[in-house]
Image (tube, rainbow, N blue to C red; front, side, top):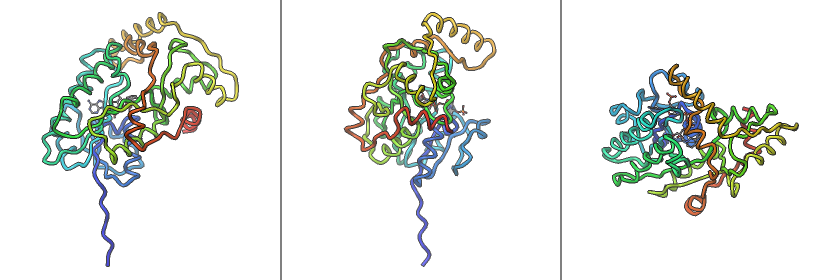
Length: 312
Ligand SMILES: NC(=O)c1ccc[n+]([C@@H]2O[C@H](COP(=O)([O-])OP(=O)(O)OC[C@H]3O[C@@H](n4cnc5c(N)ncnc54)[C@H](OP(=O)(O)O)[C@@H]3O)[C@@H](O)[C@H]2O)c1
């Protein structure tokens, strides 16, 4: 008798052409999920080549693309987001209005899929930057919604292969020079991207509906800059020169960077809001809730993750 083909559940993922979305897609596809991807026209070449997915061409502005993407899915993982920008309006157009449209089409499904929304630890501090405020407003869209099940994830700084934000700085550290961009007393959590993808996979099964979850690599109290530099020194096997960068200098560079981005029309490297985030003293996750609600536990702390990220 021919064996019956097992068809896995379907997950629709936004942001698959980005750093985190690609890792999530890889993890879920590897576990038998059928992956649907929303891809912006022109970004197809950024899709991870080693995966099979059903591609839906469109943006978060495109209700009909979102309807096709979401309808018939068992789950939605919303990773797409704007991480670099200048104005509140720019961030809100993607990180708030995009969530509103996705929520609207999800609520309208005959059988609504469950939704995991990628917020950020930044949502805890909405006054720091337009990005942070947009992430808090994006969360509020789901919190006001009773029409489908959702979970909000608030990752801290995520790093790993394919990362275009933190990894370049870490590579700089590994070359022997470490600019210290935050105050010495600042503490922050970190998370290796594959552990994050693994958390998404566990969440989809255990789904603690209606929860906002912070998650990190398990290091209690996080790291400070000196601890990260000490780890980088061990990984490099040679000394590293660390240079504190004062806040006023970062703000001046941000002014220049934002000005040239405005003139040349590209996303700025550094802005006033980004500097405020960098200078904030407490980016340590509170993981009590996720530890209580989920069987997931992180596997990779920074020293191992740093080695892995540099090797890839
Ligand atoms: N990286 C971190 O450390 C970190 C920490 C906490 C939270 N997060 C959150 O995690 C999510 C993913 O971050 P990431 O680091 O993977 O960012 P990323 O590499 O910049 O990827 C962003 C993704 O969103 C897509 N996107 C942006 N605007 C879109 C729009 N209007 N319509 C459809 N797709 C759009 C991008 O598509 P294109 O390829 O076409 O540009 C890309 O696939 C974001 O929501 C971010 O706020 C990230």
